[in-house]
Length: 376
Ligand SMILES: CC(C)(COP(=O)(O)OP(=O)(O)OC[C@H]1O[C@@H](n2cnc3c(N)ncnc32)[C@H](O)[C@@H]1OP(=O)(O)O)[C@@H](O)C(=O)NCCC(=O)NCCS
Image 1 (cartoon, rainbow, N blue to C red):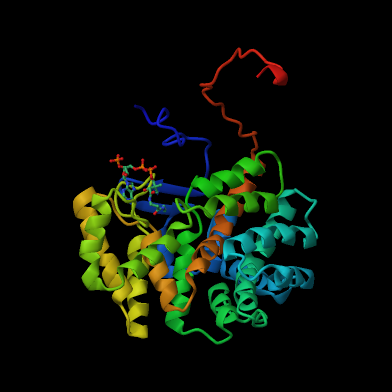
Image 2 (cartoon, rainbow, N blue to C red):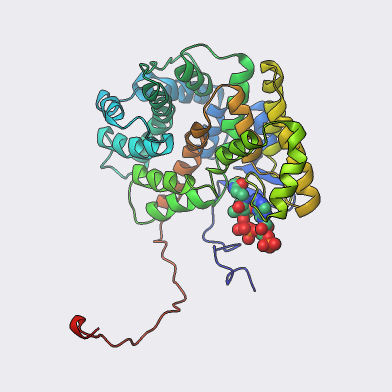
């Protein structure tokens, strides 16, 4: 069976793009020509945002202006009406549902909502990227019965998010780890959520609608939801001593192991090693590396038995958990970073648009005879 008839648009090229390149055989991820390994080592999330949106690295002056705009209170704060809306939601609402609802509601307050021009879409992308961390953190506080923490314009996006979640200043290692995680999740070519964003953008719909489509696609456990499932697996395994037997049994029962496998990578996802290292460092700082030890055993057994390798979702959860972030916030954090890539793709789609409208190979009847209801 060829890849097209297997479905899922596997290996189908939908469009050209200058944003992100993945070499699935070599395990390389490249944003606008720059290897993600170099960006992790030398760059910041703010600089990567500039790179993805503008196509090149910023000058010093450009980076200062861009960082200032991203961190300003005017762009980071939530409209009071949105905070009231969050407070009205049932406390059991999941963070991904809140994010999907909140982003949709933010368009109602956006001064450029009705303007689909290039400049207006860029302004909306900047505001939304600045607002999403505030939205995610505000819900965390509200559902715990606490008041939201106001954003601090002196902190980077990573540091400010961790500060708004807990109300206390995060450690430098936590900030570094979080910044790297944001860099690593910022874009990934035509993954399911980005494709969803582009399909919506290709009808010449607006940025907020495109991002809401993307959030809906990211929510599923085969995409962004996998990192939550990984932590649930770690909790089930409980201790490193149980890991070997647990994973062997899961594979024998033909279970799907979350955090493994990828549609494009045939080798280890290049993002996984950075997240493993940071998860281990954070675990050491917190005095508990058991989650990383459990995952290392799972990697060994799955690699031996199935020749399937870790993806980005395997170790990210362990790192976030060490920072005290609840499991159901992992996917919203993914979205807080990926909104940058989604926005870059929406802008690219709008700049050279053609409606995305594939066909189905119809397999149903074609000449059924209508029978009136009283004769059926
Ligand atoms: C990401 C994913 C959906 C890509 O899958 P895909 O390209 O559609 O590949 P398939 O589902 O067709 O799997 C191909 C084979 O590998 C196996 N496989 C793939 N991922 C697997 C996993 N995580 N655990 C166990 N087996 C897996 C499948 O069972 C299948 O084996 P078979 O040919 O013997 O039936 C898939 O690897 C997966 O479900 N991973 C877990 C979820 C996850 O971590 N998602 C985050 C992605 S970044």
